[in-house]
Image (tube, rainbow, N blue to C red; front, top):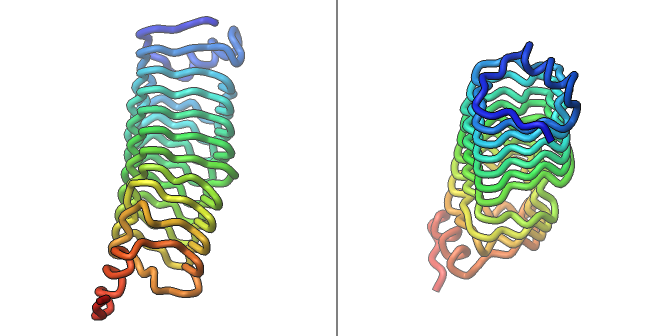
Length: 225
């Protein structure tokens, strides 16, 4: 598999690589910062320890790509096709994913503070041990998912579907949950302070601990004895 190391990759260079090595290129410690790779077909490419901050991938085809330890603050994946992509240990703070296709995409131990994922589509999207503080995740589906170690503090989760999800660790502290659905979710393993679990319609049959219940009641001025 052809590997490119330590190069600065601009659009013209990427087009040449795509022509010569479709679906097989590996980029290690390369700089793609500020580059415009919009609408290019890079399915199957691998990026490791690459700098991608401020780069643009509008409507690019990036299915089955692999991203490991990449630095990508403010990277723009708007409308990109990312099905079956994997992101591990990446810095993607303030990144943009609006209207992107994220079916079966996995994020592990990634920094996504302030990320904009509203209107992203796809099933089986997975986050594990990720920082999603103040991220915009409106309308995403986590139905029946294992939600492990994610920090959703102050995130906008309006309209998200968490029905049947099981939370392990992490936080929902002060998240916006307007019209979100948590029916049957197991919330016992996460911090739910600041959210209204007393909304019977959206939290029907959700599981919370005695301590969480006491804290929720205290927010309404009631004391659990």
